Length: 141
Image (tube, rainbow, N blue to C red):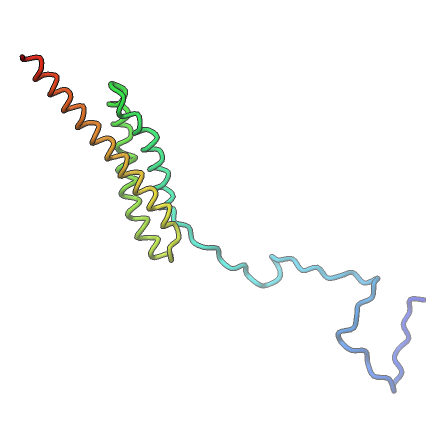
């Protein structure tokens, strides 16, 4: 039982694609040892991600600029991240063009958030200067 008889000399040999015995262990192929390398993933645009993060931080800090007294501190705290978001957003958009569009949306979002934050800071500072000037002019009369 379980032993095979040798093939008769007049019979052809079994085909090479014969179904394996149920008792024989199945060969397992592991992806790491299969010899085929995994295709590389898409490149990431780290500059675009940094621009987006800095833009969000700048906007979250810069929205408080319109509040008197606190606004001076928040404007100073939001200015640097907003400026960096604008710079990195522009560089990230250029890099996205080199990478086939990877990160273009993130870079654009960081650029826009940085510009909006800088606009809020500048317009608020201008408004406070005008208000202070008008107040000083009214006190003279």
